[in-house]
Length: 97
Image (cartoon, rainbow, N blue to C red; front, top):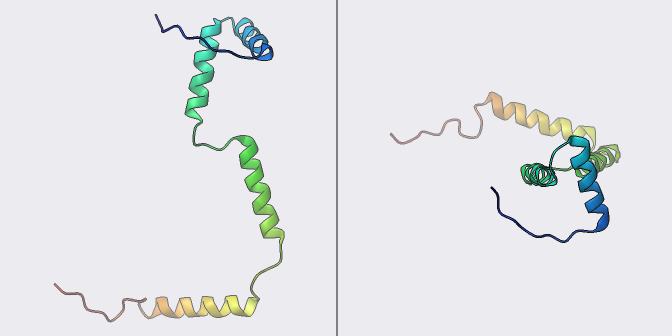
């Protein structure tokens, strides 16, 4: 047996609770337990609405103007490739045993 608790909810929520219990053929208490579990497991995860908003933001960002010209990007890539070929930043540095 569980612990009895008292909540105050609006009439629309009561109607939804009754309808959900009836449709699923389970008790109202079970509907509440399952709803709370689903809510709890979703804490920290994005809702579909939040996910869509973030994707829209990314789409807008990538649709915007390029912040650097192609020559600057190519120059930086060239420098990175040269650094990798030469052994990177730590090349030639001896480590103490």
